[in-house]
Length: 261
Image (cartoon, rainbow, N blue to C red):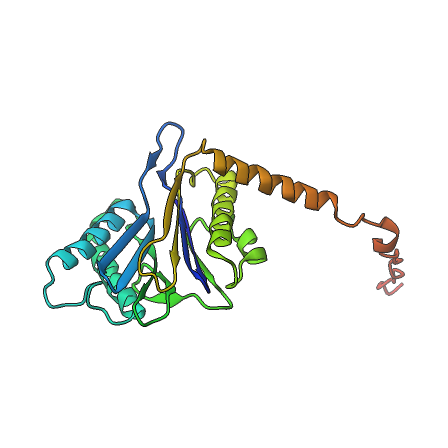
C-alpha cells in the first residue's frame, strides 16, 4: 500500500508521496512514486502512483516510449488540454491492466493502479486530476482542492481541517508532510522516504523537490511540533461540565399486564 496526495492551490500545485511498496516482518522495499514529465517547454506534468508496482512501472514506460517514438497518436507532448492528458494516461493504464489481468486473476493478484496527474499547459490554468484504474478521472475543485490515492483515511483529517485554495505553496508542502507522517503513524504499510514537490503556477518548471528519510531532522521537527500542538490544543479544550451535560433521568413507563386474568 502507499499514500500520495496532491494539492491544487491558487499559487500552484503541491505533490507528496511515500516510497514504501511492500511491508512485512522482514521485507520492505522502497520505490519513488513521483514521476515528472516535461516533454516541451510549454508544459509540465507530474504523475503520482498507487497500486501494483509492475503495472505502474509499465504505464510510466509506455508514456515515456510514446514521447521518445511518437507514432501519430496522443502523447504528453501533443495533448492540448490537461483533461486530454488525463484521458491519454488513463487509456494507457487501462490497456496495461487489461493485458495482464487474466494472468494476475489466476494468481489472485490485483493489477490495478490509481494515479494522480497534475501540471499545466501554457495558456491554461494549472490543475490536478485523479485517474481511476478504469481509466476515467475526476478533477480537483476550489471546494475540494486536494486529491488522495492509496491509504488515504489517516492523512485526511488534517487536510479537511486546514486546506483551502489560498494556502501558500510552503504552507501546502508542510501540510502534505504532516498528512504523510500522520498516515505513517497509523499504518505500517506507508512509510518514508517521503517526497515533496511544488510547482508555481505559470512557471512551467518544477520548483522544489525534496526527499525526507525517517531520520531527517526537519521531518522530526515537523512531527514533534504537530504532536505538541495537538496536545496543547487538547489541554486547552473547555472543561467538560457533568452538570450541564448530564441528561435528566427518565423513569421507565409503567408495566402493563396483557393477561386475561
